[in-house]
Image (cartoon, rainbow, N blue to C red):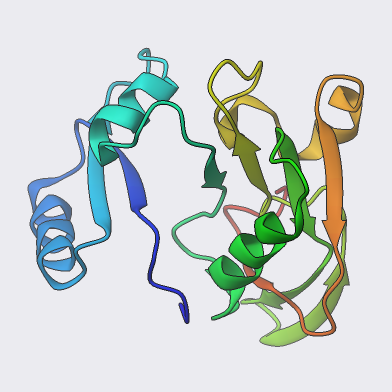
Length: 173
């Protein structure tokens, strides 16, 4: 990312194989903004867990973003999100979406331009006391159903801002 002023919180199941845990620890050593959090399936990931993991000031606005381990953001994604916040007169909870992205189909080895507002690369701006405090609290395919509770804002960019890798185990995303 062109902007390195962020904390990347990576969520893992507590039963993640040791081989992968060791690999993640090496990444953490090389990239100080990475924080690792392990939890059980039946544990609800709460914003308190996030705040503990990254040591954030509880009165600050913060951003959480959705991405899978086999997908990618454009190298300016974080910069564009943070720049957008700077344009807001008053920071208030909302969901941000870059509508334009790309899909790479592994089986056909083809790359497609894709435009979808309710994609699964959204980010959420939250503040202390917000009804929604973490992007995973809202299903990406049902964001518009929550329009009365939290505003969805589309950030227009010329370039695609995300890449989804489509393969046999995730074609329903």
